[in-house]
Image (tube, rainbow, N blue to C red; front, side):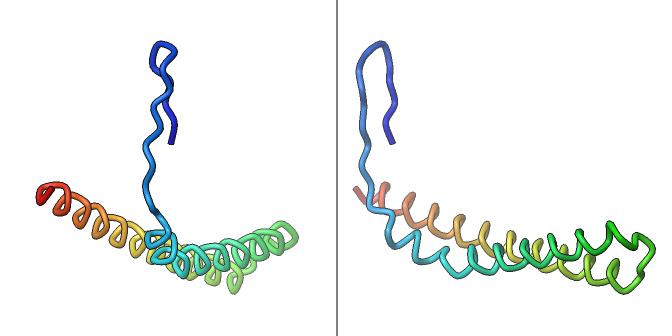
Length: 89
């Protein structure tokens, strides 16, 4: 991350590989759900009154919410760990 303040570049380096690996499966699940959701949306354009597709869309949106909540919880956990390490020095 680099930030420019009045002509001075400040670069803060951090090793985020562990964070990336921790979120990898959640991100993959989210991409898969998003892909399925796009397919359902495409089919709904042809038949907007199809109740089966609407029910499937509802289930996919619920799964997407769960996935996002899980990602948020993991990020909060990592933030708490960083805060604890910062307090310890």
